[in-house]
Image (cartoon, rainbow over all chains, first blue to last red; front, side, top):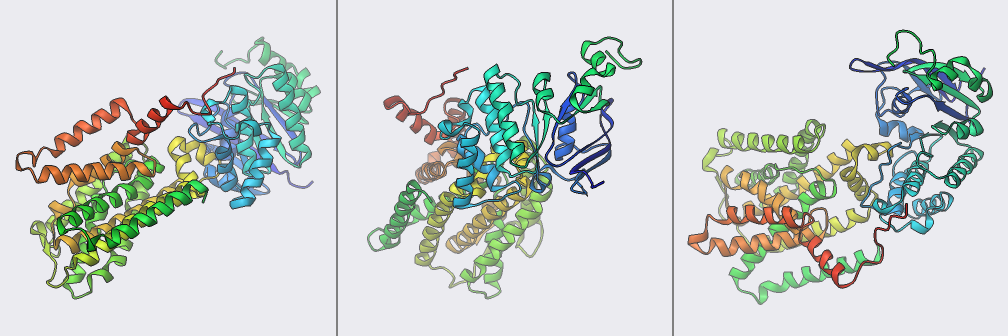
Length: 248
Length: 318
């Protein structure tokens, strides 16, 4: 069996007395849409932080294309082609939308300059529907636009793996439809997408596989239909029968 | 470079040409004042590359000025032509900025600022304590190294070059990286920017420029001492000029430098007010921080906004 594009094995992350991730393992194949779900505080965002090097795992290994990326700084992981968006949007508020996206194009994995960078930025602004707002200051965007800017900046770094952290949070139903079709388009263009999402319908509808975390532990993994019927997943979401010894 | 930059660049080159022929028409006192203003513009604009564009507030730039000045003085005393010593001074300034930056750029915000104060004070104490620098009594340049015409022209060219460099940086990918670091360093790293390397480069460029100005300072004043070139008040003025003018802009440091050097020239020529300039700087700083943190450039933009509302306005739709 060929090695997975992204292989996470036994990753733990401890913040003082809190074990935010507890020996989590999973593999993502190239071209998949891979969903990560779980109740609040399950460790989803911490997992993404570890994947891109914004946080260093306390234990475990993360391999991308066979090479280890855990322990690398964030910028180095991005330049290898793994990038994430932030759940709480972090635009450069005093730059225009176009300038924000061009930062991604100039640095990241592509390192484009001049006209080449400009044309890529233009294309990404079109694809994410931000073209009409290109010259607006990023600080003036609505939440929906800000979420799209997060995606646009990440795309501009020319990733192989795009980790989307709650890009649909706070969006209205039609915006969610738009985001879902954008994610499908990205996969068709060859991208591998990891998706943290609270909208379970969106995740189930989009994902090829789903990982469920609860209190930092993997409680289920597999195809969406099976995972959503898993008793452990149902109890984690509905709060019944909390496993013994875990804080509630 | 976009059209706006090209116009600004053309204006700077024109101003440089006028300043270079000015010695034929102006008297020496005025030329001295112009030298002081250009010197202040060099310091403020160079500092602004790291402090303004990248938001890394260092109050330790007198160290680089002093390194440039001492390199020029010491080598000139060994018989090297003073202008030949300038590249080495710039190189040493850049090298020292790297040594300082490597540990201090791990610190953020006020912690970085405090660290830079410590480093520059250490350098001053060192320069005053060892014998090869002449200790606290300083160094006198060897006779025959003074040539005001040459030093004047060099300072004008350096000032124009720094402003042109700032314009170029502002519109370059490197400049975008600096702005990104200022606004959100973690988000900058998340887009692939190696923030430490970018900060080290900006630090080295601005340190080299300030060291060049230090060399020209030594040639023009013929005498340097730890109290003149390594002075903490100098480090402070270098920070205040861009802040008063408009931090992180290209025009701001120039405006601030002109105002500061003009005030200093006026105050120094009035014996009763000679020591009051620090009081005035402090007051100016407080007024700017309270009423217009974006400095004079920000105030000007606000005035323009009153006359003609800007095209794009914050219009939250959600």
